[in-house]
Length: 169
Ligand SMILES: [Ca+2]
Ligand SMILES: [Ca+2]
Image 1 (cartoon, protein in one colour):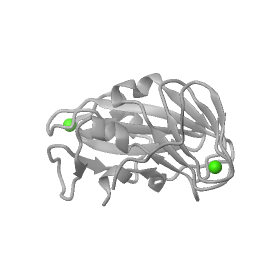
Image 2 (cartoon, helix red, strand yellow; image 1 turned 90 degrees about the vertical axis):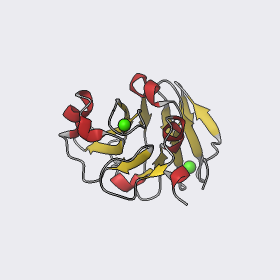
Image 3 (cartoon, protein in one colour; image 1 turned 30 degrees about the vertical axis):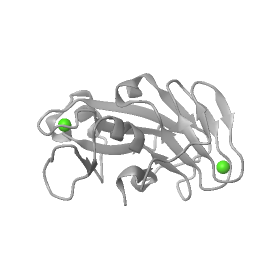
């Protein structure tokens, strides 16, 4: 358990990784990253309230080996773990699965069903991944933020590519 330590922070520039495992933090802006081979980890480093101001591009994201870790932003928002029960618990995340395109309306509408939610939706027509999370860790209120990450034409992103390493023992 613990935060991933990044090799480098990329904000709004192009960055080329190597063919080993890179740990690349995505900062505020619009990074354009080619990470090469290896089990690369992308850390979404900016706080939740900065998410909507960023839109990154991962040109060669490989779903079979690469992952995107959003733990840091969630820790900073006050979450302490992943909920083990149905329903919403104070400071506990509910990781959503099998998310459909309907989620985009729920996000923009700050829908109460997303209370303490974390999840992602990949649009394979546009190759845009939308990651969303409730920045209000209290139960019963929500403020949904989202960030868009584009991947290359030959890339896909699966739900289990989104990791929460800081919350998993
Ligand atoms: Ca690499
Ligand atoms: Ca909440």
